[in-house]
Image: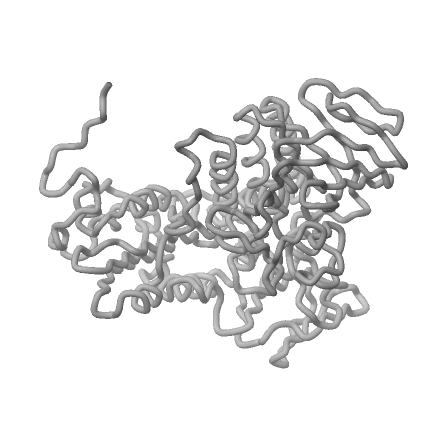
Length: 544
């Protein structure tokens, strides 16, 4: 829910009937009355505030239980992920990967002509935006098929069961819900600094660029910063990455963050370290921007300065002058009593319950694991618990062992603990680590020195006498696609012996994860319900 208010419109859609009222609003078949510019509707079983991935998942799953559901969204359906996040980012990463292949790789396989290939950035943007627009329509049609009503506009709590939605024309429509879910997501954060907000763009603004900048400064040390820096650099932009401390991705396993650092330098990205951030951004007479860092360094002549210094939850638009989130507006959390942390994340327990009995929260607005699939899983499990069968009454999502990928260049796949985290939890004497570093076979025939070939790094972290796998980390080609399966294995409690029990697929990079160390010599203990060790027969399904 990141669109500015000046761009907001209210529109009410329904999957069955949409009679028009005299005020011009399209409303559902609920009986409606209009008083003093405010339309009142009947009660819904569930109101979801936020039409992003988590909110949509919760709304559709709830409707599958024959419940009346309304979803309120400020901007476009799909939220950050679909519109200005994962989806368009992956399109740009794919384009950048093609550029790398053309400019750097294909000549090693005997292909010529790479130097003459040009990028039509406008066409790329047009097709990317068209794809996103189609996804918006798919979500809308999905709502219709599921029987979920949706409203575009700003939502405000009137009380713990009533939400008022304001359209651009000032018309206020009130909806009451027996239960309400807050899934408003997050938005980019601009840190303080002279000229920062005025002369910088956020990750949202990256997708508004009409042409590829010649020089870009990307500020931040998280996954968004390294992803967009990698995209810009591979597409041909002179790219500067500004980090506050010594490197990016400091919370990742050190082997992975150090490895990415080396690969980014090798790719030509200039990394400005120990800067403590940006002090000021000042445009020169030509419109180019000079970026002064707190360290005293200055980057001159940037066409674009992209701030990726973190995100904040969209609770600012949920409350006004309330003790939980002072100096904020719109949703009026003080009217329903929902509490937030000092960083304005909504406080929710493992079942997505807030402190108010009928109000729930999920996704990035809670600040737990800020990933789209995490929000989707949380939304579906919450709907199951609220409206499903008795067997679902204790349903909740697991926030542990969540596999994730960074679409950097090269990609990162990770699941579980880093080595420092494992040592801190289990003690160094109880942790065993397996590592591997190699050049992917793809680079085998490259005409360059071996130490110049891009490296794949892998680490398997085990704990205890049974060598339970508590962390898997990969940097390199294909890391994004191989991590999902290993995530399943970790969720099922795999041990090092379980990994060894799976015959390697050759020749692949992933086979390294099942052949590390002296193969087959780990403690012969399994985490599987049916042991796969020592040539055991495969498990059989239960039959009726």
